[in-house]
Length: 100
Image (cartoon, rainbow, N blue to C red; front, side, top):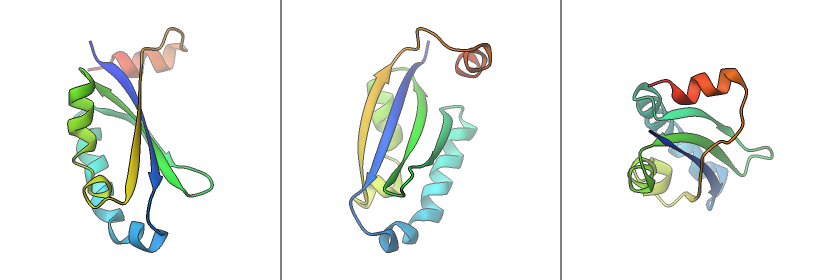
């Protein structure tokens, strides 16, 4: 059973640097959406970073996933990772997180 990981990304560099790698970052997101590892993602408001909800077997797999992010590789963001297992959710969310 997969565990959920909340990735909180915080920019360490100006938006001009972020923009240079945004296309590569979006390709990274697309790859893990196709693999069923990402549930949602988006920008923080104000635009100081972003968030990703990731499904992985364990922390090691989650780390391997975010280590593929060009933002991480280029030291553009800090990744804060919170591992959690939902104890309550609505039916739609249960279906999403339990879907393989």
